[in-house]
Image (cartoon, rainbow, N blue to C red; front, side):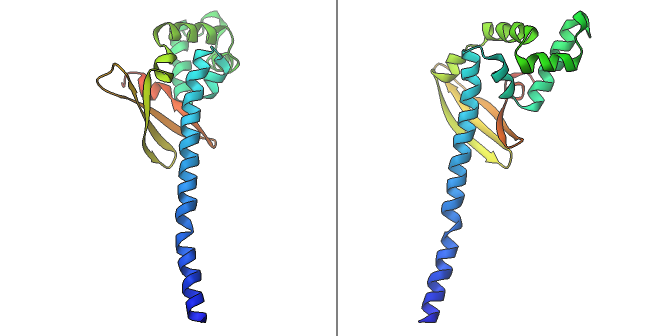
Length: 162
């Protein structure tokens, strides 16, 4: 009797991690997709501060660096730190930057006219495969978990690689 109970107890323990692992994975997938969707909705709504919070650190660094160079290294009294703060708050430079960006990129194409499929998820990195309805090849949206939240690697996904 004791041996049967021990086997039953151990077999129950062996199956326990699988449902918990699947639950964690589903929650992770939901968090990933929600973060990506949230960024494109923020673009659609022109919520500049929310766009910034949805971006990976590397994307923020790239955008600040590119903008600083475009302004002519300190023109108009902007330092890189001041630019970063402007983007964080969605102020003058951020509005000009994102308005220009959104003239060339329509987030509706991603939100409504594309299919999304989960790619690989490994530790703090993930991929979402986005296929526009008229595209012959999908795009890969790179995601990174930073400070416990999934962020979109916008520049990692769409800027040309150097």
